[in-house]
Length: 247
Length: 306
Image (tube, rainbow over all chains, first blue to last red; front, side, top):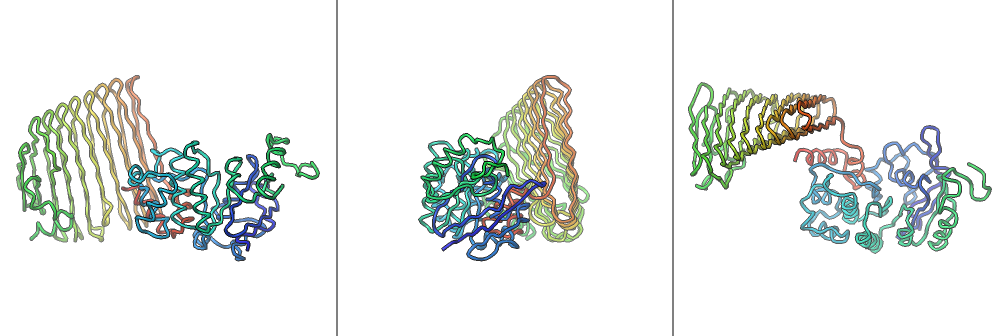
C-alpha cells in the first residue's frame, strides 16, 4: 500500500520552477531515497511534503494515506505521523536536550528518551542536560535531531541529507537509527546525493530539475546517478533525459 | 508568620533551619529573620519605608554556601526602599541569592539602591530572582553601582519569569579595574501591559579587563521593552561583548540599543542584538514533532529565559 502519493507536483519561486510535474509513489514501511545533484529540488520536495512556510502553494497533489495534504499545516501533518529531519537542524538557546527530546517523544518517560539517545549514538551523561545551542557542532545537533525522530516514532519521516556534518565514526549511528526506525514500521524517505546514504534505501528516485529522471532498485539508480549526474553533464542547467533539450 | 509566607513564595523552606546558611529576611521595612555565618557581617538599619543594609564579607573569607536575602512585601500595597552598601573585601568569595517576593501585590513600589565594592581578587556573585503576583501591580526600580578592583570577578543575574512584571526599570553600572571580569545578565518574561527597561553599562577601564552584558526578554500581549546595553572600553587589551535577544509576540513591542565604545586600539568589543518573533526553523521543527503552536512557542521562550 502506498503511504504517500505525489501527483504532478509543481512549485515555483520568483517565477522559477523548482519542482516540475513531479510524481512519486512511496510504499508503506519501506525505505526510499530521492537522489540528485545540487539544485535538483530535493530539499524543496522535503519541505513541501512537510508543508513548511512558503512551500504550501503548490500545484498538483500530495496524498498521505489517500488524504490530501494541501490544506494541512505542519502541525496537522505531524499529527498524521509525518515528520522531517532538517539538513541543518535548528539551534535552541537554553533548551536542554532532555526537554527537546521529551517534547518530541511519543512516550514521555525518561527511559524512552534514553533509548532514543542511545540509538542515535548520543551519550546520555554528556548530553542530557546540555542545551541544543551553538555550543554543539552541526553533527551533534544532527544526531540529537535524529534521536527526537526516533522518540517520536513517526509513520513517515523525510530525512534531508542525514549524513550532512556527520563524521565517519558517527555515520554508523545514523544508519543504525534509520534501521531502527524501519524496524519499528516507519516509512523513510532519504534525501541525499551520497552514495553511502543511497545504499540504505530499497528503492530510489533520481530527480533532476525538480522532476523524476529515473526510478528503480537502488543498484540501478546508483549506476544511473553515477553515469548521468557525476559530474552533472549540463552543469545544473536542466535538460530532459530523453530529448537532451533544456526544460 | 510573615516569614513563612515569604519562604513559601520563594520556595526556601528547605534552608530555614540550616544554621550553616546565612540569611536575612525583610518584609517591607522590618527584618523578620536573620542568620549569620563566619566571614560575613550584615548590619541592617530600619529606615522610612525600608531597610538600609551594610554587608561586609571579610578579607579572605570564602563562603561555601550562598547567602540568601529575601526582600518581600506580603501586603497588597506598599513602598519598599532597600539601600545596600556591600563591601567584598580582598580575596573574599561570596554568592548571594536575593529573592524579591511580592506574592499578592496590587500596588507595590520596590526601590533598590546598591553600592557594591569588590576588592582585589575577590569574587562576588549576585542572583536576583523576582516572584510577583499575577496582577502586574509591582514597580521594581533597582539602581546598582559596582566597582571591581584588580583581579575581581562579578557576576549578576536578574530573573523574572514567574508572575507579572508590572514595571521594571533596571539600571546597573560596573567599573572594571585591571584583570577584573564582569558578567551581567537579565532574563525577563513580559506580558499584559508590562513595561521593561534595562540599562546595563560596563566600563572596561583596567588593562585586560573583560565584560559581557546579556539580555533575554520575551514579550507577549501589549508588553513593551527598551534595552540599553553599553560597554566602554578604555583599558589596554580589554575585551567586551554585548548580547541582546528579544522575542516579540502579539502586539508587544521592543527596542534594543547596544552601544560599544572603544577608546584604546588594543581593546576589542563586539555586539549582537536580535528582536523578532520566534525563529521559524525552531518553531517548524517543534511543530513537525507534533507540538501545537502555543506549546512550541512556550518551549522556545522557556529555553531562552532559562
